[in-house]
Length: 187
Image (cartoon, rainbow, N blue to C red; front, side):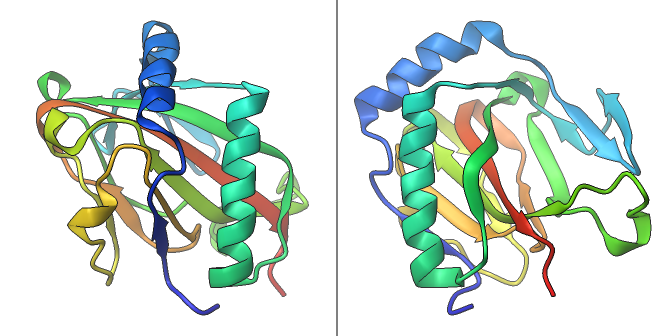
């Protein structure tokens, strides 16, 4: 692993971002947070609205970007044939945020129902322009994500086992796409 995170501009064009927001914003519902296999909504850890999307063209663009970044930055054994892609909305009026968390299943809670694959690369693509909202920064534990990464269409990629959060949105609305790319368990 060469980098603890990597960011890249222009994963999506501004027009693509606007089109995704227009298409998926009307479909959002309150997010669910999973803890020890239990799903809850409306908890204090996370305030956002989401919808999972299956658009093959968007998934192709994301898969291509993740493949290139992974080859250069992480070198993980990943499988891009199927992955979750989530449209997320964080609104200031809802105090939108997501507290510190990781995107993997900790060893202490794995059990007989644990999948054969594990999340390895987490990706966030910002769909909003930086001046459309205040707060709402993606923060990665022990890392400084530069302000330049807060561009419409830019992607931030990091290992799923790294702690991260979205700080509270204090003005406006932050829209993003989030993907979790899996692969065989680390050895």
